[in-house]
Length: 225
Image (cartoon, rainbow, N blue to C red; front, side):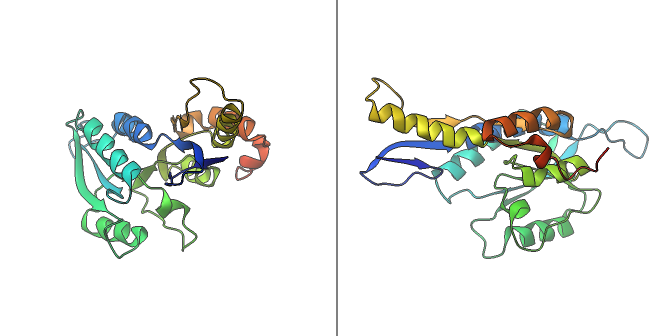
């Protein structure tokens, strides 16, 4: 009995599969892209309607990455006041995603938001990528390692699952297959949700509960009161 998690594999022993619903996450981010940006004014003191972002993705790496990119584009089209200054395929380049982001910001320094459909640039063990104060990022991961950057304002939005649900769901799929539960789905998708600084505390509590962790440990980056 083999239940896979993450990227599916072609193996006759596989009896179930669980993965994060990344295309849904991309849709959520695209729907909220404008609302997570703080208000800005132009030189005349008027609220700016046109906002800008640069997009980084891995279209072509696998089916999930391509579906995620396509869903984001299909959804973000509904907001004509969002200008996409750059559309960069990190998978198709021989340079690191971190380097591509830095190069893009050199060319488009006014890009208000760096949108990465792959969170690797922010989770990488390479030297930590830091954005200039005028730039922010949003990505498809809500891992605790990113919470301090959400708290500081460097990240404006994270979209991801309660990671503890992944393992629980995989065990549930395996148990249902072993018990021959009729009509039990063999492929399960873990839903994602939007996390901002405003709702981080609530998300952190539920994240900790789903993973059987102490929320105080997850929020230990905050100074003690």
